[in-house]
Length: 138
Image (cartoon, rainbow, N blue to C red; front, side, top):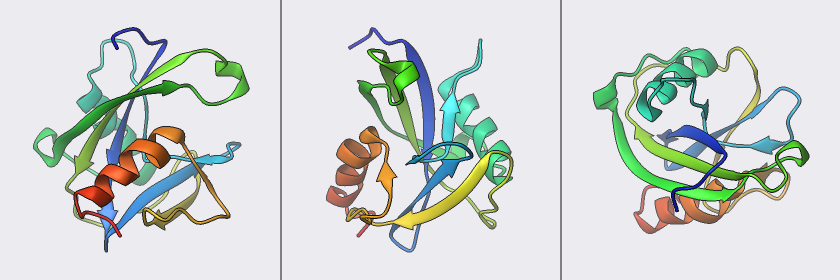
């Protein structure tokens, strides 16, 4: 599938066999760190920028490993009918995860998503099951 309306990139951060998800201020859904690509930006550059903005993490290109590209209908009423492309990378990092900027809440989740949170569809239906199948998360 090559047609999409929104292009995002996200980083998979795993600690103690759990995936980091975050909820931005004013949003209800938890997603992995990342966001929309800026004009002229590659997916790798977007993940590096977003990790710096959202968590003060400094990662380099060689800290990212391609995990996959996923497509889904974009979430949110303002995105009704729009197709989303999400390029996902596994992130090798050092340092502490410190929420910054627009991040309101973080959670570390297993593939058994807690009932009290909603996780974005690509992560809930595609990324987490694949991480579990690869024995990277519980």
